[in-house]
Image 1 (cartoon, rainbow, N blue to C red):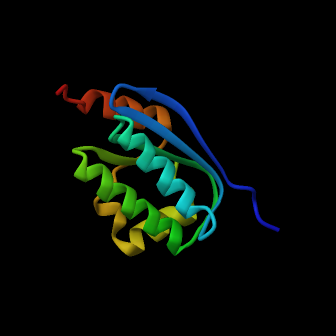
Image 2: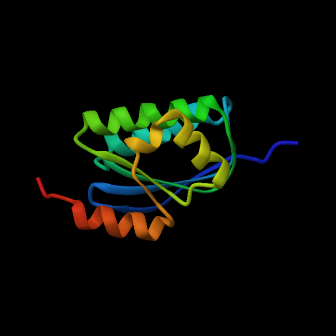
Length: 122
């Protein structure tokens, strides 16, 4: 049995948005996450915080989606910041070296505070 996957956007403010994920971040969910994140970037929110608190599983498709989102955010002069990374996913990020270019915070609130402090106005 799989955990139903959900994508929520609980916060948008200027160039910043939070995308909250829950359930299994796998080959079935990755395209929807990438599409939603790219929509947020296109809508003027290039600084994204991915709240991963509710993610129960992540496979290589989920990791690939995060890299793709990071690249698109970077191309839009934005950033991707992770928050509330579950232990197993944190280990995968470390093993793949993704933790070296994706900043992480213990909570979405901490990530928002850090991002809001680093924002520049255009």
